[in-house]
Each structure stands twice: as structure tokens, then as C-alpha cells.
Length: 109
Image 1 (cartoon, rainbow, N blue to C red):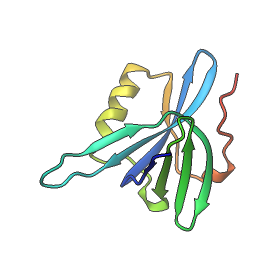
Image 2 (cartoon, rainbow, N blue to C red):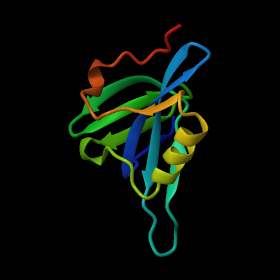
Image 3 (cartoon, helix red, strand yellow):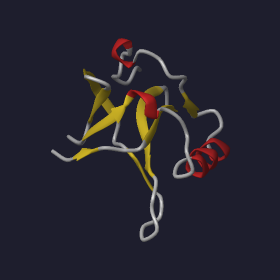
């Protein structure tokens, strides 16, 4: 199991062939030696709250530990989301920040 600790994160609702999936788009701000980076997880299976961090468990086994105050697009992810939205306007939607513990994460037929 790999655990990631991104600086920023958003949840994307993705629809493909009548299936709904939820994925994390996460980013890290780079410094002088390293540029910004981003990842799109494999799909959210479940979430737990650990103090001030949400722990998102992905279908590949990875865990993303996301600070509650880190929600939103940043320099590392805004271009990725914009490109996805332009390419798939009816299939990709960024969700508003909410109580993620109340979400149903499994894909729906």
C-alpha cells in the first residue's frame, strides 16, 4: 500500500457508459529543484476521517491522505482539470467541497 500526502486535491465525478466513478485529482507544489506534479487516482472505494485529514482508499490499494483545508485546484492541477473538462465536457465534473464521509463511492449502473 502506497500512501500519498498531496498539497491540494479535488474530487472528480466521471461518467462513462452509464457508470459513475469518483476519482481524486491531487497535486504537489514544486520548489526550486522540482516542478509541480499531479496524480489522478484509480477510483475512490472508501474514505475515513483521521483528525484533520481525509484518508481516501483507492481501488488500486493506494491511500491519499488529504488535509481538509487543501481542497481546490492549484497551479499543479488547474491545467489538467481544464484539459479534461474541454475534452470530455459531459463526462467530467469537479464536485464542491462537502462532508466526504456521506458520499456513496461505488460506481452506479
